[in-house]
Image 1 (tube, helix red, strand yellow):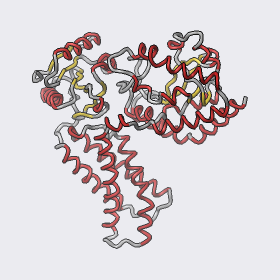
Image 2 (image 1 turned 180 degrees about the vertical axis):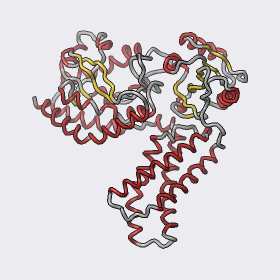
Image 3 (image 1 turned 60 degrees about the vertical axis):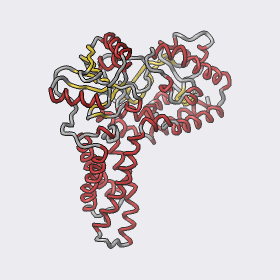
Image 4 (image 1 turned 45 degrees about the vertical axis):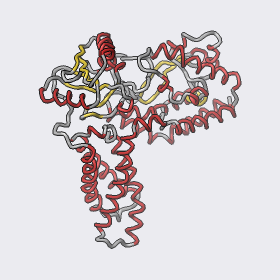
Length: 440
């Protein structure tokens, strides 16, 4: 009874406090992709009772289920904003509703879908004797579960044979030793591991280029804003203006970087930055400037000279565009192959893939819907304006999601064994497979 009262009160307070976050996340989900804000899925709860678990939607909305019944590393069905929600576990927030209703608790074994519960032994079914939870021992130990999946394997089979038994072993131990104060301990551990596990060394390594761009832009935002303020005051900064400058810098950085991230400024490989990036920079600067004007007005900084924002916007666009010229000369066409005709996946996000993309655009011979590449550092990055959505093992899923007609292999010195495997995966997916004429 004590635990239920604790769950009810804390979930109610959490829903009230997080209401602004819910509204913001809901709006961003709708702006990022088509489909509903929330995702509902049947799970098995206490005593085998089924209920609908509630989450923020993180995947592309399709009229039918496509791909594996669970999400693995670099799942191509996950949207750009959905990946951020998953990384920081923000998609789990709506489960506060499940806790409030009594379907779940804050702490307990993670509820599974009915298909997986069918594999439980009589001993493992004991986990259903308690309410499932948002946080539990198995979620703490296996925080980034999707990273455990290997490429080229049946994810459902791998989960049932390798991951599920380990989770159930920990959950059974929890059931036999649980206590209220033990749950409090798990709750704090869950919050800690959620924050600490959001950014891993692997994540930093795979996104080193994008992190570099992010840090450079943050520094340039401060530099441009301070420089603009100095120029606006004609080199003579009164004490009152210094105070306003110092008070508004945090707002400037926060608003600018949030808008830049939302618009996808850090999803492009540095070597292949295109004119598409410049358009995003202009949009990001204009949008963030409008937001900053509103923010400074409502927080009471009404003495802030509005001309600073206008001048700062111009300087910032020049700075951000200028230093990107160092990494890559702008390309003339920013749309990345939207030419109609066949829908094509290009295998190989590198120099040969770049040649293939430019050839297809020049000849208007098909629509490149995405790149695929086996290098995990390239996942979800943009390459000539086209996103890398998966690796060779995602061909079947991507073929169904984007009605792909052909996979074009554009990799230098690719081995015969690799070509044959890709052809086999294409045959399974029901799409053609060709090797780009310049590849060897």
